[in-house]
Amino acid sequence: MRFPSELRVAVLGGTGPQGRGLARRFAAAGLDVVIGSRSADKAATVAAELTDVVGRPVAGDDNAGAARAGDVVLVVVPWEGHAELLHELVADLAGKVVVDCVNPLGFDKQGAFALDVPEGSATQQAAAILTDSTVVGAFHNVSAVLLDATAPLDTDVLVLGDEREATDLVQALAGSIPGVRGIYGGRRRNARQVEALTANLISANRRYKAHTGIRISDV
Amino acid sequence: MRFPSELRVAVLGGTGPQGRGLARRFAAAGLDVVIGSRSADKAATVAAELTDVVGRPVAGDDNAGAARAGDVVLVVVPWEGHAELLHELVADLAGKVVVDCVNPLGFDKQGAFALDVPEGSATQQAAAILTDSTVVGAFHNVSAVLLDATAPLDTDVLVLGDEREATDLVQALAGSIPGVRGIYGGRRRNARQVEALTANLISANRRYKAHTGIRISDV
Image (tube, rainbow over all chains, first blue to last red; front, side, top):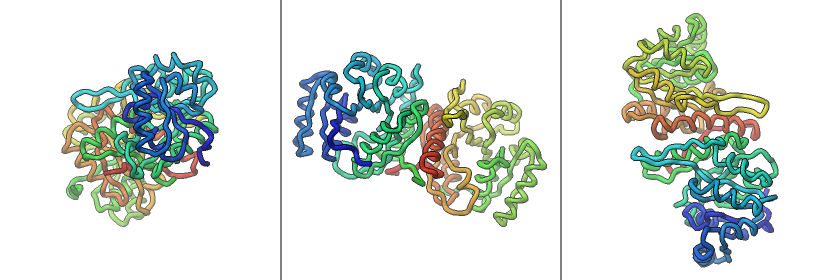
């Protein structure tokens, strides 16, 4: 399936490295993109930068405005503000496909590690808060550095969700990025380990001086 | 690094599909392999089968005998008996590199899901019990079906541990299987998500009618 080009993609937290990189790639794929940020001014600045870089208009707004504007809304905010932001946006996100991309990780001298989440995972937390949205988990393990560039990537995106139409849509969205496949990875209850796997990739990045990603073989 | 051919590899639970497949591949790589089982008779039967299949002698013993015989000892037993077996083998495994390959998973009508482990992961549970061994986690995501065959695999093995010499050794062991690379994946505290990721691969296997594995890109 191709991602329907009439659908608008919103990226909340689109001024951070990961969100900016995803917004850039979706815009470069010809999709209609709006980035959100806590500051509408900052969103406008980064949107203007991306418009220049991609050569296609990218819009910017505060997170609530971007949430309302998007048909598919990616949540790419720091874990610390995750629950609070989603509580604020419950009404704005009603009826939409919400793609949670957040990795609950801690960092210390030994590197990254997974944080415990009462709901099990960031994706499950989003689903618990956004009861009128369809929540999918995806884009957890994609290097921000490689996203904010033009070279094709070499990675798959595991897509987690309980509603087939929504996971198919998000797989198609992932597939709009050159070198990326969206692969079904199970239900939301199996999101935790995909989020946490980012800690392992960070460990591998240190060891191998790389920007690692994952590929699923035999698919 | 090459796995030193003078080291003997023991596979506890070597009569189960995953253990049998690993034992077969290590024997086919020219390594000295002994499989362990709760029943020494069953171990001897499967060892004789593998000897026939591989064309090289594979030994069989009960788990304690295999544990004593191995320099590197893989634990490939069902999660249900994991802690109990390791408590029994504390003395037999002292001073050895123990490779925990166990995935704490549950299954219901919706498929596989990760179980909570008090110590965090099977690997951390092994390390908590086997205080005189060096515990590494590895081989969690490798298809038993593909292992018990001769075709090269198409997968990487994430190796988790806190002692560099041991993780290097287990990476070399993984690399003895055609088509497999052993990739450092972080410390034991990050083993949980690699064990649990098997639930996602099982979900993908169902969806795609495949025997999925993972590859790490950019390494």
